[in-house]
Amino acid sequence: MMSIDTFLAVASGGLVLGAIYALMAAGLAVVWTTLGIFNFGHGTFIAAGAYIGWQIADREAAGLGLALGILGATAALFVLGVIFQLILVRPFERRGDIVTASVITTLAGATILESAINLIWGPRSKQLSRIVESEVSAGPVVLAANDLILILMAAATLGSVGWFLIATRTGRAMRAVAQNREAAELIGLHVARLYAGAFGLSAAMAGLAGIFVGSMRFMTPTMGTDPLMKALIVVIFGGVARFTSPIYAALLIGMLESFSNYLVGLYWTPAVLFAVMITVLILRPAGLFGQHQRTL
Image (cartoon, rainbow, N blue to C red):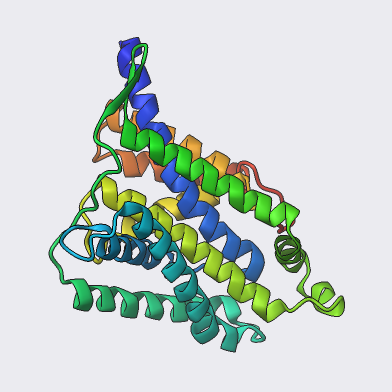
């Protein structure tokens, strides 16, 4: 029988995982809803964000502090995402096989970027310093202050992106393109520029998630593979009918993974997650919170 203290500890761990997965999956969903493609370079964006953040923040490198590392990494990943879209996706936008072509090109881009990370920083593992090392307690719940800050930063980022998509002219234009590209072009929206912006926004969110992951575990050039799989599970589980759909799904998946790790162990947890994903696909092909209409 699980005690209340254990339950709260496992649940708080699931909340931390859910916050990270929400950042990963929301960025992945932005590209999917806007361009209708799956970006296989998203996992490598996560790794690139972690390494660029480490290069700026860590004492062994530039030593400018984690705050500048976060700002620098997200800005650099936004630019990298735009470049990815211009070189690897835009030339194929008008082709009927855009989905297949983008799978090949983004996989190629991910391989090149991963090799570049390995060439620049080497294969030895690194780790970002935590923001703070203390703990925060509220009754029986004890949570690392770094994890609490991580949750709050993820929530603030997702809230800001949601506000941007709803309340700003550019955000509303992205939503219009996601719903109907031809109509958006007819009313004079610069669709190519909006596509590049969506890719950049997605990459920036992946870079921030990478910094969070890099502060929790050791970094390697291939560290984005597992987060990419988790982000894909979240997107499939929750659907992409709304920007909030993968966020809700990420919290559920984070809780499910945390409790599965405790109850059945690390070895069986991936099987549990895939079983849940397959069940959702059978019962609700558009996702647990999904609809068939594609929109942000």
